[in-house]
Length: 380
Image (cartoon, rainbow, N blue to C red; front, side, top):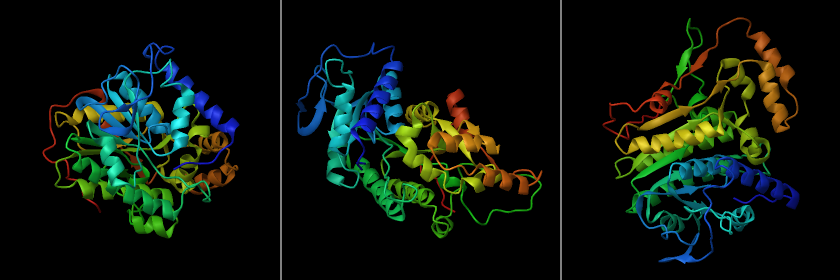
């Protein structure tokens, strides 16, 4: 979904993306010597750098939706470092213009990167985009800059429908065997029936799901959208010849996140005061999130990865940390209110404790055990 912005703002974003690309690859050491535009065989919408193989089917050819988003771009960058050929599914001409301004396909272009125009609500364009790819990374998401928090109830509905279309296209495309779906920690934490009076905190792990009714009643549209979309993806994949894994990152931060991910970040922080008080407000570096995507994808090959994975680096525990997040995002200061909430809670232990052990084990070692069933995800 395109967002209108000033030329100066767009140019600054392009420069940040170019800097991130060059920084991650030793000043462009992996750049191709020469590149040009031309359609690949059988699909006039697909573009590539000259000298490539046309995006032909192969075990290391993947497609990334939302590839120029904050998370998507980091995932693409990480995939290229791991030696994959990446096809970027772009939705708008503006997305394509950004890539051209970055000169990814100019004379400083980068081998292994392709583009295809595809709309996540259009099954046919998704099928064309995925055809020839062994795996799909669905990092695309909807935003509405006209909404109060950048995300509306309508966006939540669209995101769930898009998830169904993406998984259906994966199932339909013969070459696709695996899909990594970007969800959110918010799809795990919002419920109204957790026990309150306990000596020990309730553990929030991959078995926990946010309550859609609770999210709807409290107008937590971003959490609602992520929860509904992930559930829709699991329903669409169940019983099909497709391996699906979902990554549920906390608030994604990193260099330039205010400019490049502010809409999603502000939407994520709706209800942040309650999350802070309950020990549920966490952040994840965009590099950590990207690496998690690639690692779970590779582990799916020998069935050592399956189901959901919560991803975070740090749990925000102090009001001043929350105030710094607000400052970085340009949100009006609510630190005083957060501090008051923390003071009201007294010295009581946190009601909840986030758990990332499943991903930590996968990231640290390749486990010998396997998952017998990729679709054993239960919805509470």
